[in-house]
Image 1: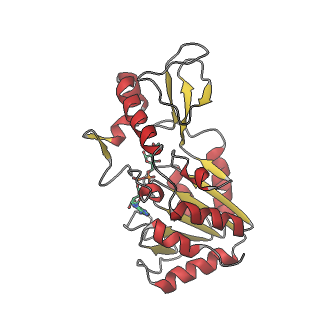
Image 2: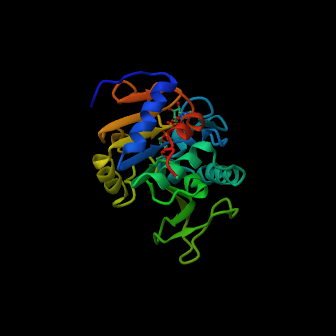
Length: 248
Ligand code: OAD
C-alpha cells in the first residue's frame, strides 16, 4: 500500500481523488455508520454510541439476545422507528451518481439501515444484514418486515419461535458469500472509497486494505488513515458529492 499523501480537505486533493474515480474502470465503496450520520442515524462508536446509557456494543451480541431478548428488541425497535423518520443524505445520493457513471461499481456497506437502497443504489452488498429483515431463531425462516411496528417479542408466523433482527452480531459469521464477493471486487478495484467507518470491525475493515488506490473519507483519524493512498478529513455529505465524475 502506498504512503498516505495527506490528511485534510484541500480541494486539490479532493480533485485528485475525483480524477481517480472518473478514470477508474472498477470502483468499490465501503461504507459505515458515518455515511448515515448526516441523516441523523447515530454511529456506534464515539458520541451518540449509547442507548439508554448502554454501550451499543453490549447489545449487538448473541449473548445479549439470549440473556434479555426484550431489551435487545427494544433497542432494535427504537432503531427501526428512528429509521422510519430519516432520509438519505447527499453522500448516499452521490454514491448513486457514482454508480451510474463508473463502468463497474460495487457498494459494500456495514450499515443495516438500507438508506443506500432508498437513495437508489442498486448493487449493494450488505455485509452486516439489514434491520428490515427478521429471522426465526428456531426455524431460520427470514422475512422482510420493513415499516412495521413489531411487538416487544415478535414471533415467527410459521413455527411460533422467537424472531431476531436480521443483522450480524459480534461473534457471528457474515451472510454466506457476501463478504467473499465484496473481497473479490475490492481486490480488482482501481479505487476503493472507504466512507464513514471506524475500520475497527473485521472482516469488513480488511476490504479497506485492498484495491490499487484507497481513499478514506472521515472527519476523524482511524487506524486506516496512515495506510491509505489519500485520507480526506471531512464529512461524507460534503466530500462524496465532489467525487462524482462530471461526465453525463
Ligand atoms: P462506527 O460508529 O464504529 O464509526 C463511524 C465512523 O464514522 C467514525 O470513524 C466517525 O469518525 C465517522 N463519521 C462520523 N460522522 C461522519 C460523517 N458525517 N461523515 C463521514 N464519517 C463520519 O461505525 P462503523 O465503522 O460502521 O456492526 O462500525 C462498524 C460496525 O460496528 C457496524 O456495522 C456495527 C458495529 O458493531 C454490527 O452491528 C455487526
